[in-house]
Length: 210
Image 1 (cartoon, rainbow, N blue to C red):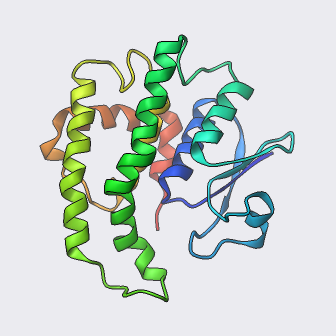
Image 2 (image 1 turned 180 degrees about the horizontal axis):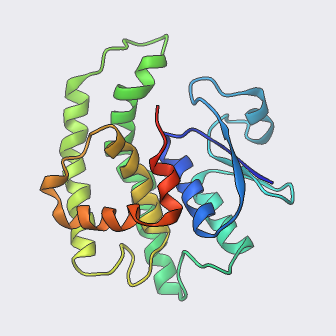
């Protein structure tokens, strides 16, 4: 059985779970707390970060982007990147935007203040409202970007559902769980996310809780 070391409210972990389910691959999840990684996790990833996938062949891959690429090549029956070079470039470009820019601007500041500070022994555990407000303001830019793309396309990277949608939805679902998105301001993005939530591969992810 494949194993996925993951934390339920980690956007990168959700991305790995999402693509595994989209490709209809069986796997078991192993819970890892980001603030207290297990010795078992370090056997596969010396940085002690999630997600880490251990495939049935014994191959281990860590990092959401590397896992996505590995699964698309190892199990190509269901393609989630694109059928031609332009589509692949577009889906990777947008996935990277959410993996890096959205993560830095919006996701991590909110997760740090609302979740990680609860378990920290080294910093003030009280959430910083200024940090949360700043991330919320930047969030509007990204949600408008989603709306702009969906207004012109079927999915974020074009006609087909892809890793771009997987990356974006994985992070957004965590923020949505925390009540950090004012959906009434982003109706087009809201409709896109409703389509994501209707996918069977995403429903188990939505059942996660802290």
